[in-house]
Image (cartoon, rainbow, N blue to C red; front, side, top):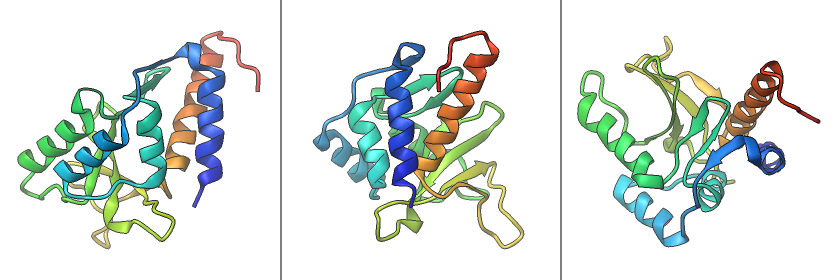
Length: 163
């Protein structure tokens, strides 16, 4: 588990918060309601993220949250509209690349640390073994990657980045 990655990402988000677009986080009961509506349990690090942010955007990368029920609506929409192949009930949409690929929490693989991998869903594309491509071992690693990508983008755009 990469709780360290999550903590590093959150520290960087706080350090560069003037470059981020966010909304107020969600309450424990709102998060519980989302889990109930989706019929699954969310990983611990993602719940902490949701408590802090309704959504998070940084240099063109957005992680969805509960602002306007985004993860609920995106996930339910994918479940309703992807029948062949069926969008797995265990996936929660947290990010979209814009090319049709979605980054999803694979809650069927929640481990003892209450974490799960982030996988790619692209029109149902699976690896030869029938599994989805793993993008990150858990949400913390995924978030840190997005933050680091955003910092590189900010630096390329001439923004001041002090590491």
